Amino acid sequence: MPVSSSDLATQSIKKLLIRQSVPASVGILFMTVNVLIDAIFVGRWIGSLAIAALSVVMPLTFFISSLGMAIGVGGSSVLSRALGKNQKEKAINVFAHQIMMTFGLCSFIVLLGIIFKDEILLLFGANGEIKEPAEAFYMPILLAVPFQALCMMGNNVIRAEDKSRHAMAAMIVSAVANIVFDILFIKVLGMGIFGAALATALSFFLCFVYITWFFIFRSELRPSLKHFVFRSVITKEIASLSFVTFARQGVISILAILLNHTLFSYGGEHAVTVYGIISRMLMFALFPVLGITQGFLPVAGYNYGAEKYGRVRQSVFTAITFAGGMAIAIFIIILVFAKPIVSIFTTDAAVIRDTPGALRWVFAASPIIAVQLIGAAYFQAAGKATKALMLTLSKQGFFLIPLVLILPHFFGIFGVWVAFPIADVLSTLITGIFLKKEMSKELSI
Image 1 (cartoon, rainbow, N blue to C red):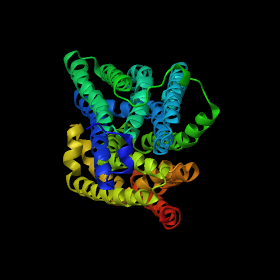
Image 2 (image 1 turned 90 degrees about the vertical axis):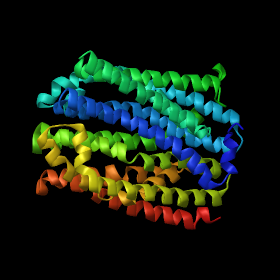
Image 3 (image 1 turned 180 degrees about the horizontal axis):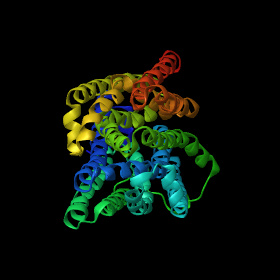
């Protein structure tokens, strides 16, 4: 029996969350495995310095591609509520606007990235011996970023249609292609870090091909030429919610710049390499929690649009329960197996010595992050852009960046690592307060 978006208003919340979250989690797993494999292959076949180069370039390209993610998440919140109200024409218009906004904005920023390449690399921390490999990695990745952005946008729209298996498949295509091309270009052809960049760029393109196929042959949303005309009302509605996600990703990129420069100042290339491994573990290890958050968005958004507030309330509590259990399990694994995990990335004895302790500190508050992630996602799904923006920025923007600026002056590099759990605790407390008020007022109806 074919899946319809209307199922989001009728089937059990647990079943819907599992159906949405499992493919989302698997997709995120493959996407983060993509990043991990790059780091492992680069670290073992090229050298630990190359991991530092990846740590410099990837936040920049992630910032640009996050435009697609932002427009995808923000637009899909509008789209989900439109489908919940049976406004299919509006949903198609929203999707057409998402395509135009993603392609236009990303292409413009990529052009700036080409013109100001040297200044941007220096800004993002391409210092000392890191500069040369960072330059080799930069250009192929930058040129492929619009394809990645369109994939990230399309992925969110696919989940809003309740066809999350295709969203998962798109990420699997990208991850498998990257692994195959990494082996070919780095190991077989000996192309070094340029080969790693070329492999990643081609994997983005293949993901884009799959996403395009889905929207031509499988989607409920098939815009025609008449839909590709900018309408200010739709553009503003998408932009107001997209800004929430983009602001968060922008703050993450600012944080990456700050971390790269702070770590280089206190520990040179070695400290940047240590964080290169930790940052990839942050993306990889939390994939089930992030998958549940992604699966929660269309369920909450659709039911909020349909004014089924009891189901929205139930989806919040169920998602927090599922994600919280996963986060606790992840914390235990990191606590016990930190050193073996780090050893997978490199044979550098100094990196293996220093990274496990830092990794444990960074993950120290992970058991409670489900409240912060699901809470912020609820306000975005409900279309409450201001609260969603504030809560989304709370960890990195309001707490982590100031802590990274202050604590190293007193505790050195240890101050960087301990800033992460402090920021997690503070942002979770604030989100919990806002979410409790929402539960007792609007969602009590």
